[in-house]
Length: 269
Image (cartoon, one colour):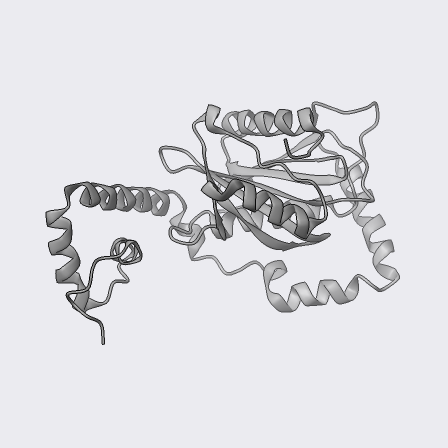
């Protein structure tokens, strides 16, 4: 049984904002907030932020989980990875991508060739963006104020020295990060948020067999979330920066990420 007179916790405040607080604690929390103006203001800010995110991205929350992210499909892909014919499928995918073409930007080297599974990698990054950008309470596993721990943890899991970009110059605060399954193995996922609630993500994973590439743009045509992405490979790591389909803003974010990673070769500072 819940003690109605027990102290109000931060977890309860989050539940209060999300409408998940047990009914027998509502009166106690409301009374507590009436006596703590600073916390009441914080709760009001959380609620306004949640309303802003729902207004912008709420429709995506009702979309079904993409088939490629469902557990049985992930396991099926892992089993398929050992089959010899998968190499031929990868070659076919690469040819199809190259025939279709892709607008290069900030090219590295005279000839840039996209890896055979890059379209899949980018699609999964966009799916992860759409899946988690609408989350209010649990968008990440590790909070942004644990940057050093998060960097060490994800670098170890991916087997690569990673750097978490700093986007404060663009007014974007690091929300945090999480570990995700990707088409090439483990993938790192970082989320950033602006003052008005807009969110951007950086998704990266190892691409040992892929050459360095120029940056490519994938627009948001055909998806209900209005999202878009820039993607590239650098120092055997593939990156995808996703966000709202405002190409100018997304390009500014991507340039900042790209420049920070380029200065360190993709490694931690």
